[in-house]
Image (cartoon, rainbow, N blue to C red; front, side, top):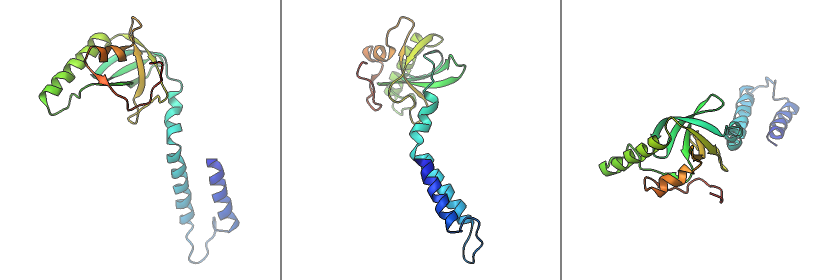
Length: 171
């Protein structure tokens, strides 16, 4: 569909003699600009498919190398690449919050993740969206014992349910 739009644009300009023309009052640079704008619009309109393409082959196992906060960490995947991971359905207090009591809870949430995941191998299960707008991998995480960590951190009171990202009904 997108290539058809480009073909029609280019073909119509070629037929009218505007592609390589040097007619008085006509600037060939406008064609390049119009073509660039058309290509940019097509790329932006299909940005979701471009973001999802590399995520289709994400490995199911990784090792947690660094904990950022209670709902995100960095993991080294089986394919040799380190990526940021965001827990689906989980929201923990932010470490950078202005309020001291919120930062305290954020520290406790981070320590909980460090205690359970850092330096350990995990299994990741993916959902409808594999990446968030920041490029982090969205995943359900199972620890060594097979327990769903997303559920554990909420059940223990270190984080709360976060429903921004759509998720499967079986979780």
